Image 1 (cartoon, helix red, strand yellow):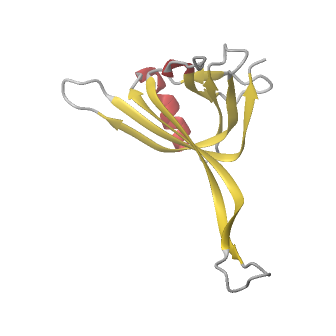
Image 2 (image 1 turned 120 degrees about the vertical axis):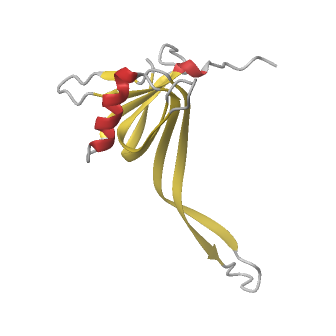
Length: 149
């Protein structure tokens, strides 16, 4: 069996766009060391009877009606990003984000791009420990995978 291609968690990064046109710049959130992407589908379920045997139990059918991506991250608070987190949380409009996955890998790398709203923003601190931050981004509209070329 061949070994699978794997990557360290540092190759998964969350980057916020600055909104500039025509050439938007993206900056990675530094020190967010735990990241999770959760792709979900809104579904409806239907039970359709068997017309040849209407007394038989019907099998469930699932119909996808929507999609969403939730990105969560947490780690040590880099004070340089505090204003970015606060501004993204305060902004009523979603911002452009990229979630990079090993963008230097021409075979498997790339990034997801889309508009996201920063819906949760937490800061915690315990004595004798570094201050921590947690964020949740919710997709607003389509999210596109763009492979590295």
